[in-house]
View 1 (spheres, one colour):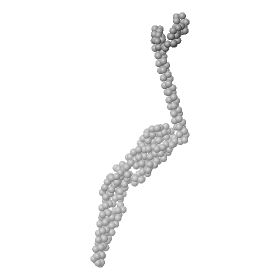
View 2 (cartoon, one colour; view 1 turned 45 degrees about the horizontal axis):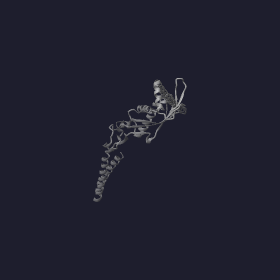
View 3 (spheres, helix red, strand yellow; view 1 turned 180 degrees about the vertical axis):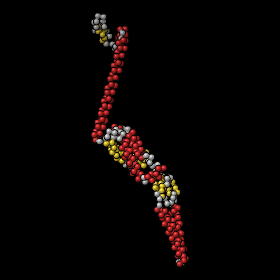
View 4 (tube, helix red, strand yellow; view 1 turned 90 degrees about the horizontal axis):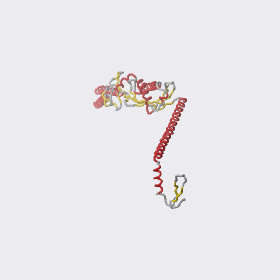
Length: 303
């Protein structure tokens, strides 16, 4: 718009200088009139060039342009690239890339109440983007991109997060699976924003509960760990007992097999076989029917 004002000014100045040139031509030397004439043409050509250039606008990659003039907004958004526009119109550029809120990797701290009416403090951030087709209507109803962020995003994230937390218990919020809570937040934030923006993702960075709740949660976790340790020890004891039972069964079965196989004939055979393996001079016990043991030396003679 400033460029168009400059162009119009140069054209008007060229016309004024041209009139002056015609006036000077009647009273001044020919050289002065020619110089003034050239100067007027220069202003006219410069103004026209600026006006022509002002009809061309370049919309950057990842941007959308909204064209407005004298309070009227063009409903057709200007997509990225080189576009021809009304030279008197003003262009409002908006980003249609994914953006984080708060910007720069910050977080929004929000106080909310759980379904048990317990206060928790959360650090939340969201990822969002503006639909190119919604840009003209957003500019008409809200304003610039900064105003959209402060009004839609900020209000939606605060209300949506509180509504989502109000449906969750303290145990659900502090459970290992936070994706369910984040999913509920995303749904509620999108509901608050409507179709004006697209909520890509909601991130819950940190949650702080009241002191008494934190103590209760820590005690519960400690009890669960103790129970888990006791269960583990019980399983070890049961496994050892099972192994001992199996070992006892094996010993009993082995003894049964041995006792069934120890017949008098086998014992006599085993006795004689062992006698053949004894070295000379060994003293052996010879059983008798009367029960009186006899000691004999394999080398000869009665012991």
